Length: 171
Length: 226
Image (cartoon, rainbow over all chains, first blue to last red; front, side, top):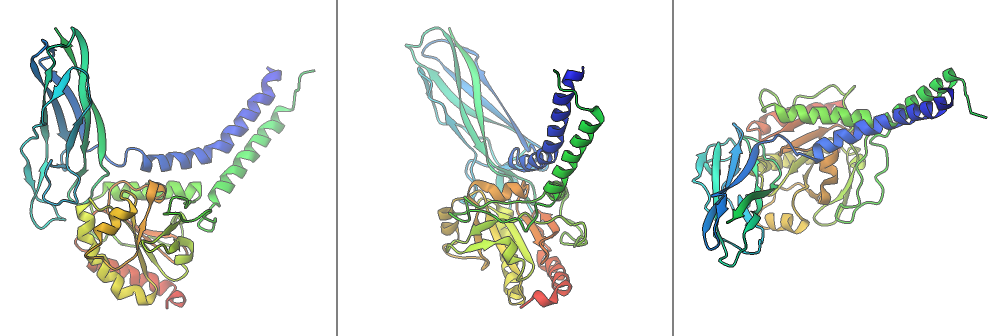
C-alpha cells in the first residue's frame, strides 16, 4: 500500500489540475457538438427487404420532426434556405431513382411574413431502387446521406447530414 | 528502497496544485492575448476562463431554451457577469477586429447568424437601424457567421447590407467558444468586456427593447463613448 502512495497522490494531483480544463472543454464541446436540440430523428428501411435480381424496391426514409420545429422542404421558397436532400451512395448492382419528397406543410413563423413550405411531424422520403439482373444472391446496403436543416418559430440550427442505410437481401 | 512520502504532505500537495489550476483557469480572461490573428479568422483564438466559460455556456443554454418574451435584452449586473471570450476576426474588407480592443470604444453587440437562417435575416434590418442610431456613441455591432464561407457572405450582401461589419468565423472557433446553438444569437458586451445579456431567437421587439439596454450601458461608462 505504501509503495502506491506516491503514484496515487500524483494521480489525484493530475486529476485536480485537469478538472477545470475538462469542465471548460465540456462547455465548449456542448456548443460545438450537437448544436442545439435534437429537433428531428431519422430512420430508414427497405421495402421489400428481399428483392430478386432485376426487381425494384423502395428505400423509405422516415423523418420525425419534434413538435414546435420544422425542417425546410426539398424546394424552399427562399433560395438562401437549405433544402432537404438525399444523396444516394453508389452500390454496385443498385440503381437509384429520383427521391420522392413528402408533401409540404405551410408553416407560419414569427420571422416570415408568409407561411413557409416545410416538413413537420412525421414524414417519409421514398427513394426507388432497382437491383441489377446480374446481381448475385446475398446482402447489400442501400442508403446515402440525408441533408436537412431545421428551425423553430424564432431560431434556426445548423444543417445536419445523417447517414442513411437499410439492409436488402438479394434472393 | 520504496519511496514512502508522508501521505498528509502529498494530499496537501495535490490540493495545492488543484487550487492553483482552478485559480489559473479562472483568470484566463478577456485580457488574454488572442494569438496569431487573422487569416480569414482561422487563426484567431478565443479565450476565456473556465468559470466564465461555464457561466457563458449556462447563459447560452438558458437563452436557447427560453422563448424570447418579456425583455430579452434586460441587463445582468456587471458584477458576476461572465467575461466575454476574446477573439480576433477580420471583416469582409480584411480589417482585423479584436474584441478586447473594440470594447474600449463602447458596448459591443455580437450577432451570430447564417445566410440560411430566415429569423436572422428578419432581425438584421432592425439591428442595422439600431447600429445607425448608436454607432456615433461608440456602440459597435458585429455579425459573426460561422456557417458560411467569406465568399458566400459577400454574395449574400451583394445587393443590401445591414450596415454593420460582418466577421466570417471560418471553422466556427468563436461560435464554439460562445456555445452557439440556435441563431440568431445576440451577446451584449459592456465596456468592461462582460457579457451582460444573451438573447437567442428572432425578437420582433428588438428595435424597442435593445436601445434601452444600450442606453443603460452607455450611461454606465459615459467616458468611453465618443
